[in-house]
Image 1 (cartoon, rainbow, N blue to C red):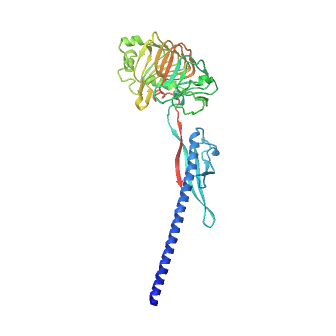
Image 2: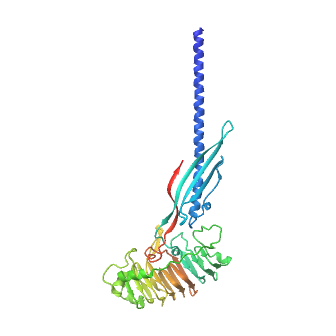
Image 3: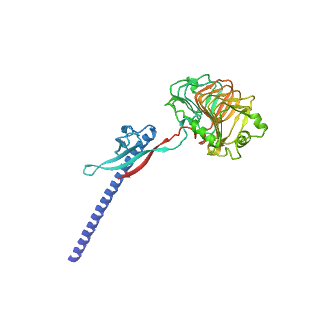
Length: 426
């Protein structure tokens, strides 16, 4: 082989070596870049974990967000490869406590081939505000029974929700006093002042949705405000578009049935003398009936439609047989999990239910509600005081109050958790 051939072979070998060396460097560079991307992703995952944990703590706290340390987390290790996360919270609105800033930092530490320690970080920064659901259902109307003072449960009392899978909870801002062992509450029981409930009686609280886990289904909690009924506005609207009187009102079911009166519209026109119109046909426009005196429901009163009875006196439900009561209407579509009352009975005085009565309505009393016999209530009740005398079987099928029924009570804007107003990450 000539010298030129040897030179050519050597050149080819050197060229190949250079090419392979270049490939090696390119591969190393690609591996380094891939490693950095993976490190950055692990840092981001850590930052996202810290951010989510802070959001969880914010969602749990229904009180004003005023103490930053309550919501900060970390530094904590994330995963198995030494990534860490940490959040820092800054309260923006120190008066209402409904706005704050969150900075979540994820850090991934790694060691180079030379043994040098390096790290990469990822930062998530967001401004958080408390979301508000305006004109929500007042908390008191989320209970089958709620009382401001002592709530005594006794006798053959059964409380359950009309909708499957829902709890029929009861609450008192006073003392929960259980007597005997023949009652059944298919929901939670809560109290603010104290409770007299034995271990055996605890077994009678059987919620469909037992979110309390292994803890007792009777527990202490903060007081639930009993909403004020705006009787002045109710009276004004009843005078304008409904019916108003200062005389006592007696609604005799036997007389109505004999006349074929079964709807609020018929009752308004034929009994109360209202001009022809469409009364009580929609939830948004219930018929308002305000009596600055006593109201008595006698015998079996059947009146379908959307209606609200208001009184500043006593309300009595009188029965003379097992089929008597106040049969107003409610909406129920159990297949689609919809149920609410179409009727409300409100008073600044007391409500007394005698005999074996069926009542289809939401009851509200600024005094007391007293059950003197066997009663079947399809609805719910809110009262300063509640008494079950145990004179018969009392069944309560809880149905939440419709939006029209709660219209004349204190407006309630419900906190619904943290909402991200501004967000950035790098």
